[in-house]
Image (cartoon, rainbow, N blue to C red):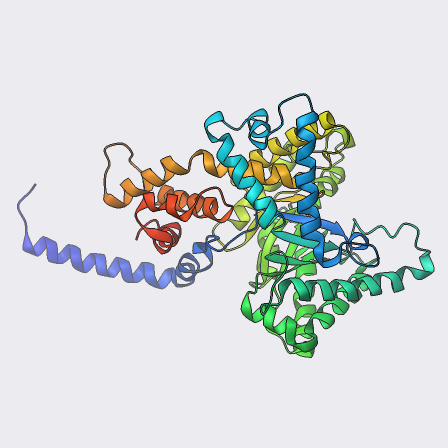
Length: 452
């Protein structure tokens, strides 16, 4: 090293201070983004799936009503009984191996899947008043009255599930109402108003929002332009004043080409998020509407189609590190029929769930009770597969041990997030995570900054 020159050092220090002051003045607004909106990973619990159930299948006489999650869980467990007659041996561990889970993990994955199906088969549920709500058999003149009645019933069900004083249902739940397309906008807003007014009775809506703003989920579908999101924010502001409740967040469903690429050639998801003014909890990709809009033939429409991957790439970039969740779509290949047909449907679903988990998309939609089997099998298997090596690498990173791995803060953040999700979905236990030596609070700090 050259000999230390005090005069040169003093000059360099003064120059550095001048340069820093220049950069600080120029980047004031950008620094606020770097420290705030651009540094907000999803550190809270994100549900592994959203279940969409048409309103007529959950409200009214003869429907499961508030017991729907339990009904679906029991149906999923009953479907597992068919596996023993499908031509292969019949334990859940055998099914796990049949679907590709490594033999050494199959028994643990099976046990933890069964526990989830018993304890929390449905993590997130939408009572669907949009595409799934067909009203077949209801005369056109009676459809408004029918939807009104079901909206009132939906409010009662949601109040039962989400009431913080005595929750009885999924951790997350809400409705999907009709879009802001001018042909159906009035009907969608009427249903929304009925549900929220019903929830506001006895202070339930206020309590839900004050306790956990992420618990109640309102899904705005088929957004085509960020101005629709701006208008919806104004709608919610009116509802909040009238009902005297805290700020109401919501989700946006991305199902149209215009929601990916704006008319001026810009990325529309970024504008949608900005238009949401901090209220948007999640962007949900809509597999079939989006694929059909691009002219993809029905036989080719899939969560794995290249057009789907492009759309989700854009959504993933838009939502990364800004505190907004991202959900993949669904497969309409339902595991029903003969035991062999159910198994084939499970293979399709298992592979698709695993695929989006590997892409870094942690959530998807489920449309049928039998899909709960492979939703939880695939999710638990994925997070079980690499938990131990991730925990050991993170332990070594924190200790400064570089004898096996040369990990950096960005990788530490990813490993901490992976391990927290592994615990939340039931793939690993808190006792197993003790391998990291940092505890849950330490993992959350690592997830945010890559440092303790």
